[in-house]
Length: 158
Image 1: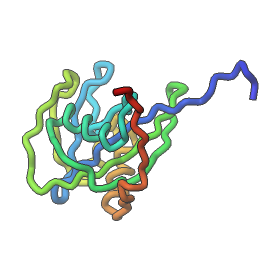
Image 2 (image 1 turned 90 degrees about the vertical axis):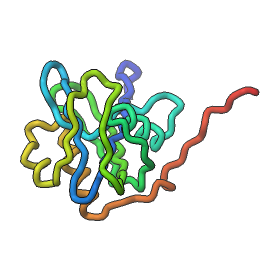
Image 3 (image 1 turned 135 degrees about the vertical axis):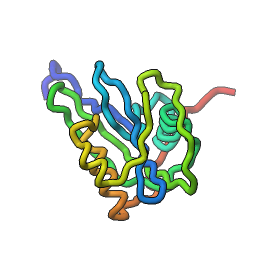
Image 4 (image 1 turned 90 degrees about the horizontal axis):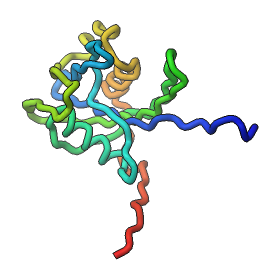
């Protein structure tokens, strides 16, 4: 490998596949002036574990505090329009009651509880094609245990 070539660094993201009965939560957000649908999702922050990142994003984007029940998959998605690749961890959250959604994010304008079929019908509105795959993997029971993820906290001086 040439020293002049930059090292490949995918963007690590977490997505929250939030399920209540037969419906999944999607947030409606404005991205570059365009309305898009997506699962509550975002980037991993420095010093944060993957499950903690998912819980944070779910709280910020939907006002929901919940624990993930598993991981539906790990998805590597290059973008077509930019030299970016996203490494997406899909965390499943199974809810027992329908919450009221709120957000601290200005670009989120609505929340929708949709069936898998309704999500597929809106494929053109989705921010990421991985959203459909995450829902399908969840419905197929592809649920990895959270204990496959390891996290070494940053050592701090007392």
